[in-house]
Image (cartoon, rainbow, N blue to C red; front, side, top):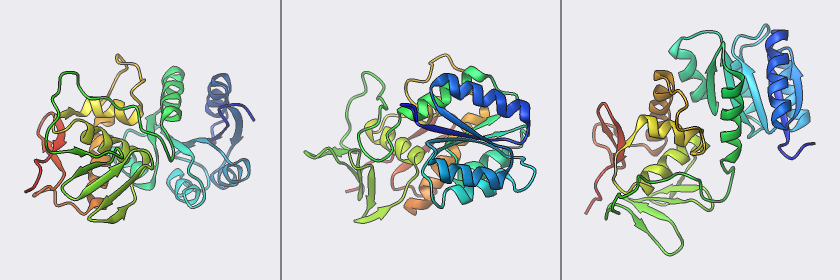
Length: 256
């Protein structure tokens, strides 16, 4: 096994599969391929994959079902690939547990950059690499205690254990949801644009001049929506996350 670990490419188009295998192999992964969904699930299981690229339109079971099965036993980073531009695909992929989503045809360099950015993000421990806009003054909306926990309106986020609780009850967030919440808490009430938050999801080291599409920004909206649902927040009367129309998101003011 290489230092980066194992990558599995689940794709029924031989040409695309070989291309993705070459990209990931050159990046430094030990790469395995699968030409069907059922085979892909078993390869991911047997090889203990760290990264999976997964085609949506497979010839036996679709990529969403493959992802559901993978998520039953694996915490691998998953990038969904599709030839369709339907926004519903993006929503379904993110709801099912994908870390990223790309539309074919894609640029090999962009795929490699996105995978590299995901690999920089911690799995279970250690603070993430999100940044706050320079010059932003801290707000009383967030309290950073001695043990580096962020506290805001009954929510507690610990970046070292990557855990979140609401009124003492644990909330289970995906990596992307956790990173977004962490970034907003670190912003201490400053507005974070959707473009900025796309880079949070991909990793702060993602090229600043990389193209960010409406689909990418829509993915952030989906992550925020999923996060609100898990935190049981009323979007009409938000306790933590406030939408700034046409711009992005910020924390709500601190409650008394």
